Amino acid sequence: MRALGHRPFRMYFFGQGVSILGSWIQQVALAWLVYRLTGSAALLGLASFAALAPILVVGPLAGAWIDRHDRRRLLMQVQVLLFIQASVLAALTWYELIGPTLIILMSLSLGVLNAFDTPLRQSLIPAMVGGRDDLPNALALNAMLFNLGRFVGPPVAGLMLGFMSEAACFVLNAFSYLALLWGVAAMRVAANAKSSGSVGHVFKEGVRYAFDTWPIRTLLVVLALLNFTASAYAVLLPVFAKEVFHGDARTLGLLWGAAGCGAFVATLMLATRTSVRGSLNVAISCVVLSAFALVVFPLTAQLAIALPALAVLGFGISGANVGINTVMQTIAPDRLRGRVVSFFSSIRFGLDAVGGLIAGSIAALAGAPATLLGESAILLALCVWLLLRAGHLRQSVKWAPT
Image (tube, rainbow, N blue to C red; front, side, top):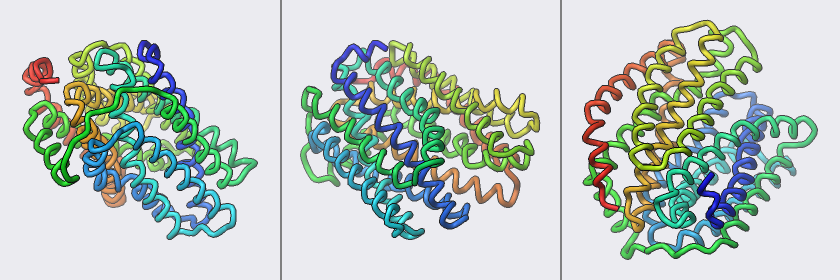
């Protein structure tokens, strides 16, 4: 918890905790609203994709925009826009004006705003902790908040939906953004160096840096393939719960909980890493763990085996993603950090969304177990490729310019 010794990060941490809780409550309530109004599983997938896909397209350009502006001020402006978006969604729902088309449009608007919000939050963290010494701990604690919200948010949303409307959940989320807005407004951090030139020029500079810096380029490849393959398990969990384990919603909850538990433990472990090489070693190990867990899970019909396998899978995916993010942020120059984080975010969440869509389509033809086994073959090949380069990667990170 050493990063909490820095007052700016401490203020951000508690505001972010409230904001993440509100976001998970809205996500569950929106999914419930979609299914209640339409009964369409396809629209559920489309709404989820609409909320994630913009980060793949808009994210890299958002990073160029971020590096041209004061990140703290820009983050405050984005929180205001997110407050407005959630408030409009609440009003449309309350007055029963919401429908499938508006739900997709609201999901798209949220996705565009998140394409700016995610890299803004991440790229501002180094300034909150005064440099790179406590950065691995701060990033791990930030990821821990996300996984903690994944534990707490959905049950709270379920309780609220039991005696309140979806609109009330959206209102709660709207006001949760004000908690982070207050924390960011009250903190005092050094202004970031701003890049000059057009957005196109700044974007191209970021692409050249990512492509020419071997550790960054290698880690982005690993990040893309990991989330395109391993993260697809989440889309198929309802299929496994019903058709493989012959269970119900409680079975699905157990499966989700196992993966979430593993992810939470991974972030706790990463919070103890004190060096960038320690984070890199965790990331490499976690990619390998993810591959083996992705083999075991679809091969078993025993819940007693599947739950530990999912815990390992959640541990591996979360540990690899947070470790890679830590390494990339540590070695990236401050003036390029917004672009580097936006590349990370767009690949992390964008490939997750695309991979989930493709996995769902394949599973409809070949079945969920066969789909995940195919994904695991790709991931095992990535492990071999990564392990052959691990030594060079460690040396490159050690001597990378900061």
